[in-house]
Image 1 (spheres, rainbow, N blue to C red):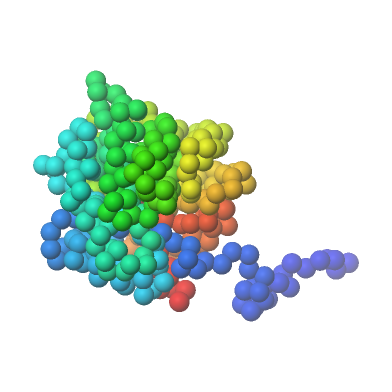
Image 2 (tube, rainbow, N blue to C red):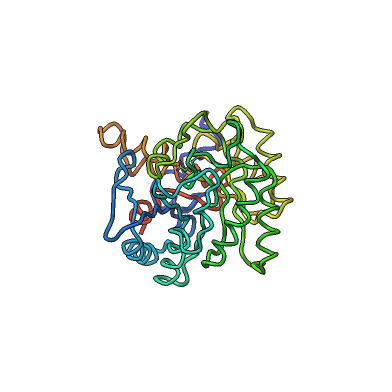
Length: 324
Ligand code: PBG
C-alpha cells in the first residue's frame, strides 16, 4: 500500500515551497526601535546589544534616511536622559525642547514621510528607574497617568504620529486619549503596550538607556508571565479606552498570547521582539553555536505566523538586507 496523500510533494523544491508559503516577511512588517543620546557625532554601541547603537541627533538623521531607503518606514524612539535631568516626577519628559521632542523633529525633518512613534513612560526620566512616580516605595497609578497624558501631548506637539505608552498603569490609555483630544490632537494615534509582561528579557534595553529600576522590580505594574487570560483583559480594556494598536511584549516566549489576542481583537496587533531576544541570538551566533541569519528569519517568521501585524525588532535592518 502506498500512502494516499504525500505532503512532501509540496516540498520538493524552492519554487513549490514558495508557492505554498503561508507567511511572507516584508519591510512593511517592521517598526524600528531607535535609541537617541545627547551630543554630536555620537554612535555608541550598546555593550549587551552587539551592532546596535545609540545615536546623537545628527547621526540619527543619517540613520533614518538609510532606513527609509531600505524600505523601513516606521520608527519607535527612545531617549537616554542624562542623570542630572532625572527626578521622581520625570519633569524633563515635558520639556518642549527635551531630547525626545528634538528627536521627533529631527526625524520628521530628515524624512517627512517616516512614521514616528514615541515611547511614553517615565523610566528613562525617573531617578528611581521606574515607570511611575514613587511614593513610600510604591508606584502611584493615577498621578503617573496624568503625567503620561501631558507627555503624550508634548510628543504630539513635536510631531509624533503615534504615542506608545509602555508603562502598564491602569487607565492611562483613556487619560492619554482625552489629553490628546483636549489639545486638538485627534489624529494622533495610540499604540498601547497592552500585554506587557514583567520579563527578564528587558535587561539589555535597560543597559541601553541606563534605566534599570533603582529598587525592587516592575512586578506591581507589569504582568505575571504565568497569566494568559489577564492578557486578554488588559488588551480589551485598552481597546475600550481608545488604543488604535495593541501590543504583546516580549515576543518569542509569548506567541501563545499573540495568537490568542489576534483571534480576539479587531485592531492591529504589534509584537515587540525585545532586547534580550536580540542579544541571546547575537551571543550564540558570536560563539558559532547558531546560524544567525537562519535563526533570525525563523524567529521573525514565527512571530508573524503567530499573528503579529507589526513587529518591533532590533533585527529589522538585518532582515531587510537579507530579503532584498
Ligand atoms: C520601559 C520599557 C522597557 C522596554 C521598552 N520600554 C523596559 C522595561 O519595561 O523595563 C523594553 C524593550 C526591550 O527590552 O527591548 N518603559
